[in-house]
Amino acid sequence: MRIGELSKRTGVSPRSLRYYEEQGLLTSSRSDTGQRHYSDAEVDRVSLIRQLFDAGLPSRVIATVLPCVDLPGDLGVAEETYAAMMRERDRIDADIAHLIEERDALDVLLKINSRHRAELSAMPEPVAQPA
Image (cartoon, rainbow, N blue to C red; front, side, top):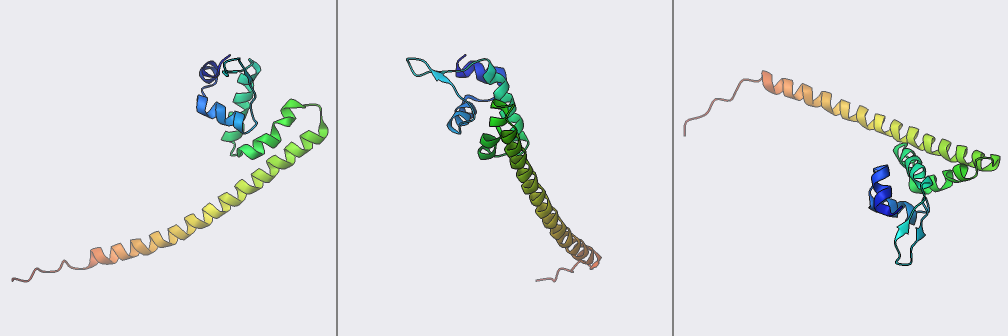
């Protein structure tokens, strides 16, 4: 199938499909006129790639994970894939911890601002002085 058909069947833009190919995540054959042609199996592969992206994995990590799909009986590849996914999970946990720290710092500033607004609303309105 051509790139437009793969795009329709997967809901992934042709631009993204070309990116996947540039990153070595997806392969195609080329016609004599240079058009990309994909096998039906690429539909499932694109779906898996989307799942991996949705899980927060960057393309460089996805490239290390996909051999587990290509070589499902290879324990070494499965172990490498597991280790790569665990490193990414640890990275995401660290990112979450950092975001929580940022949120907590913002909460402190919001409390300060709330007190300031309360003080301002308790003050009498200034009286306009005649000119």
